[in-house]
Image (cartoon, rainbow, N blue to C red; front, side, top):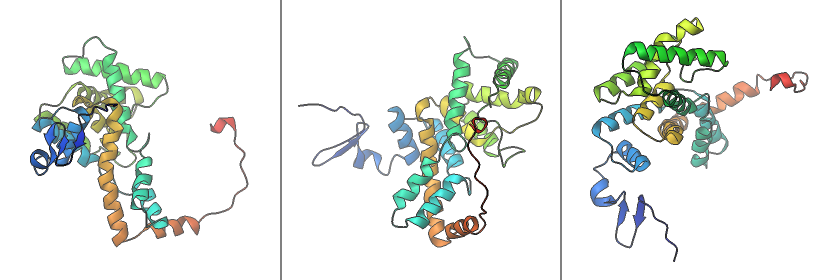
Length: 266
């Protein structure tokens, strides 16, 4: 008979095990959801400090108002109120390079920079030098630095210093956060203007410092946003705005001449 080994959930007639523990006796009512999510992803039980930073990341990414993910969830519910799962899925599918996906992009970017140097710097001057070299390279390549800038928090994202503070308090402020913080200090010398380090970016740096798998960083952002989208749905059920959004677009659209696609638009 074939075998399908797993260290995750398994069940028999009378018991369920999860991560080698009895689910009912050892996990339920004992292990918090954030701790469990970390544990499931790494198959190593996190320390209390790791859990605090991880759950701070989840809180930071849970909701950010009427973002595209929230709007599409509400509009999908308006279209198909019989499909809560469809509304949630629609919102989650919108987590990409501009919203939520920055968490993964920033974590990977910082990791690649750190991977390119023999040893990480040991003092602030060294981190600033590495950050300056990094920003200059991205500017020369005409690429944006992930996690730098925010369309609302132009004078500073309040999530960023708070998450850095929590990481420091818990001894989880590692090289990814060091480099990200240094980018915040030096980028103005290259770009000629001051931009905020955004919350999605600092979350990616923090998750990378926790040692979480880089390919899963976007998954953790989506895990957080799932809670926010449930909140959006709950509010839409009580105080609906989806139809107003629909009518705002439908009643204010205007006809324009066709505009053929050109290579310059690609």
